[in-house]
Image 1: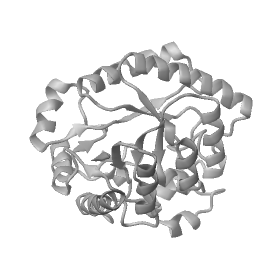
Image 2: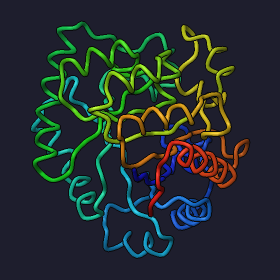
Image 3: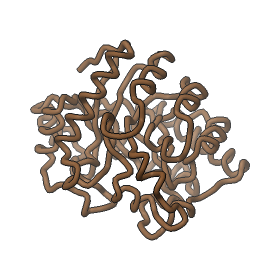
Length: 297
């Protein structure tokens, strides 16, 4: 089985919290990712959506586009409007030969609101989940037909956060799934059970780790998702509390092949991005070998 290792630029530039950003250029970010051993990077705010401009920079560092976030609004929105909103990114991702667009639902989400406690996240009834599932399935089908599939990112402080919410959403949708170990662990889910229940739909993987003591110490009625990030809830594989050897072996047992992307937002002054990238890559190489994966460029 083959795997590819990528990283997200959120370790260098945090789009929601400017104070958690390293003052480095796009080229320096790509250089550090390459030095750490990664061959893919998800897009971020300093990426030009133009392969004529970006292509030579990526080639210089041996990096390809391995995904990237789209802030979806389909929970309350209209499919035709979303088609227009995603069009530029879709065209760019197709030109970049990216594997997918990461769809993150931001309607009603409090993930970017520092003053909104985690406990105030949106909650859907089963009827609302079913209607949402039908709408996003139609959108996902359209994206795939256009040549650029989406992968749905369950996320802390969003409508689909917990294992139970994900189970219900998957029941009422046909959308491909991005499995994020850190977000599901933060939400209290059983990682092996989520993989067992939904492996046929997993098309992209985020290898986000958590610091369990930080997560368990949060006052979710008072503290927000961004408060948790500032406190250091997330980190790279090998620096946190999750057993990535077990996680990767579970995915390997189900035949998952594709990208494993490190996405770990934290304070770059406390956790220097290059140092963290190297540590995360070393741990992933270790667990990939243990799980029988061949890591390819």
